[in-house]
Image (cartoon, rainbow, N blue to C red):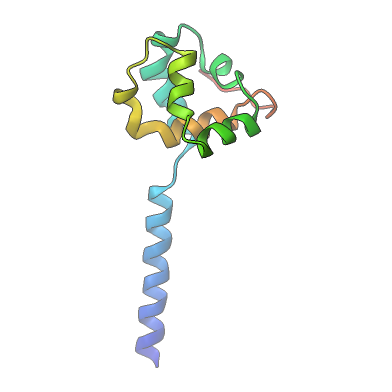
Length: 106
């Protein structure tokens, strides 16, 4: 019984560590915006994120149109170069949307 509980506890710890490392991050999204999108867009991250409300960003993400919206807002962006960062960029846009009350530092 003790071995079973130890294995179950170890499983929970492993799963929690995996979930943490796999989750997206608004701070990382802000860094990605500053490095990969800011010059292509021609404006700072606050203006980018303020293009939509949190609900609008969420709807774009759920419909699979988030990358298309980035391309619409910033036509010079190479979407292929940022595909792996879309979850982080979404978290950034959602965190600093026009109705959030938050202002990014970039």
